[in-house]
Length: 634
Image (cartoon, rainbow, N blue to C red):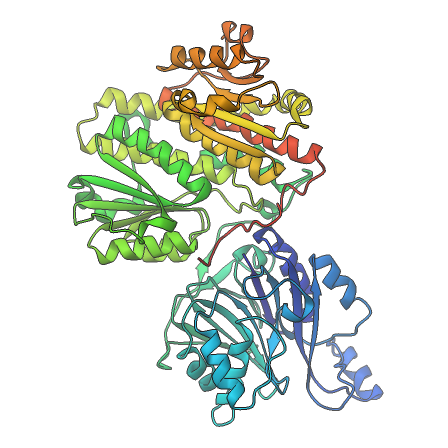
């Protein structure tokens, strides 16, 4: 949701900014813009000397420093077309992809925004909750606004303070008046040698290069340039020049921060021959699950080693209740985790929508652990939930994929997924890596609470087999595509599952909604008779997740009821189950595994099915309409 990229260094800024915006496209956006500081034009002889020195000539035509801004509604490619032919040779600039909150998508509402004098330009992720009262006050002081956004208020506030303070202190003074959230990248014509960035509730990272810095709201826009990154924390402001990065708090006190080496590679963030990132990430799941469990399973002892929980191991032994808070796909992972932890670790588990958690009165205490699950580690609702939990004295833990993210930093302990960058907006490999971590956590906590060596070893052994079992399912991709062709014209689907696969029914329905824009319902199969069966007819297909497990016979009965009402059935079944072919219209087989681990397998065909229905409809499956990869505002 919205993306910021900034560059200050020796290279031309525009290519780096445009490339960064393209890497941020998956986050979801409706418009884009760029602002670059351009020094005065030099004379022709000077230009030749500059070029001989392997630097770019400046282009400002008026003999003064300019800030050149270009904006466009729509894709980054539209912005790129507008920029083509413009000789923007500056080496300092900021850029933004906007997801509309205040004001409709249009050029005037696109970022970067500026002040009255067009000296100060900024890109902003977040929401200014008190923008209207600030705007009213600024209008009384003579400021004129040109957009409908809340963001523009910040530029005018800095302009007002810049009448008496320098750039840094003007920014600090303005930030103290804001209520809400922000990730900011700001440039100022009066001090054209720097970029100032600030963070409160919206992620920002600073990549450190050789005589250059790259600022981004997502590390995927940095990895091509450097693996050395400073992750900013809330309340921090960074003042960047080509030679230096100064970080201060809101009281202008210096903060010493060390860079983190991030292990993600450029190759992992590219398609590598696949038609879409989503397809690539579906096929990466054997590796991403292997990376999630690597070095953590001690199979011969039936144990698990989770280094991120080492410091809270004793506290976890006394925990009486776990509350999992998450959103979207991560919420569905949490539901699977509930079944695992309750059955095998013997702990009461509640799963809460993070967006609702803090708006009621959750009953928490020191014997409660609250686990936040988030791919990005920046989900606003989930972050708010763990802050509420910590205020109530609960132990807070994180299961996140992004190193250095806010949730990773603010929880007391946690476990990284190590799934690598997930670019497709609809989560695939992050989901199965979350399930893998929850399975490991089940062994870890279960062995603290009386789980036998035999049980622990059995789960650990089967977990180690999962990557190969998924690799076998991936071989069915073409067959699943054929099934998708049969159903591509249907506009309604019912997804049913029971016990461990009830959450997978929810996830399957969510995937096809996200990717294919068709209506789908996910239900516990036992609930079908309590109302949902009224929808069933020949035009309302059902995807039934029915592996051979402890509830197999119950699921078969449900399938018979659908068949009796002329409903079409796509079944997800265990290899070797020939009887199910007599009921279902189409069957996709998954290998046999432990019941608690079947969700890791049964979800793969549903990811494929959603993907193929989407591409057969001609849709952009990597960037579905109206969706953002990381929801960093409420």
